[in-house]
Length: 115
Image 1: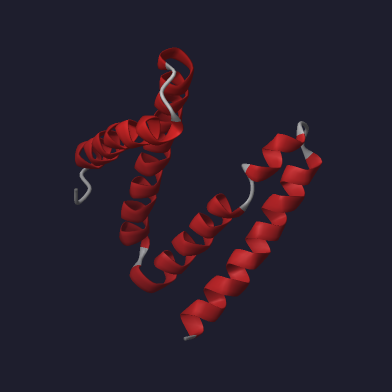
Image 2 (image 1 turned 30 degrees about the vertical axis):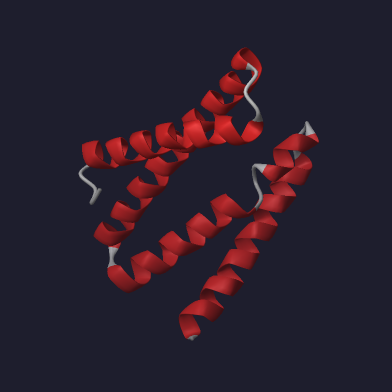
């Protein structure tokens, strides 16, 4: 139970810091980038270091990086399918999901993760 309280408090503090950073930047569309995901990831990694050590947190951070790269490629592919081929949103996202899975698991395998 204490882990959840610490995660809640630490995550809330880091979310607030990222929200202030996003509010200070221009254009305002950057504010969403600095919302929840980076701060929750930092809080999770901090707790992982304390509870499981740096090696475990390193493994978790590699998985987060692989997921972020795969999400960027997924987003690009979805945009290209929507704009260039005229597909509707659901087929474009479902087709791109295969790309996301292949890239994320491929990167984890290259990084020595447990894919």
